[in-house]
Length: 176
Image (cartoon, rainbow, N blue to C red; front, side):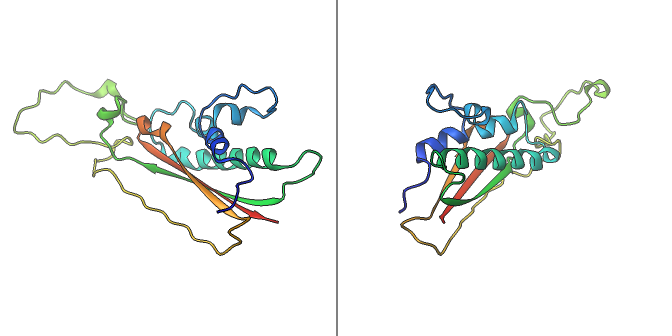
């Protein structure tokens, strides 16, 4: 296994919301708040219309941080090439489980309703569509490279659980 250009624990810090206290590390805001927190921000639930922007923000921020931290002082570029992937998966959990209102729901027109034991409640996902169960996901990556210099790191961001989503980041580095 190769030594990563940025330590694994530091990669995790960059991806999450760990605040940096070291004055020796002069990094931009995206590393202070974590690329996932900055991308998803105050979102309360999975919003498909925003996932492209979330992924783009995660990827570009992760790459900027890794390039910045892996470039030797005085050098113009790092001695690695990087590729980053971000996957956002929606949990199809009932909105009531997240304690959030449905996306786009207008409560003004709703009428009071008394349920009976003979009714089967229609659970809805975070987007207001019928609930069909939590989706599974499996991803695998393989590569042909120099195992002493090249490598990859995968990370699942835990901060999306309460928002009905998973975020998985993968970073690949190849020595130049």
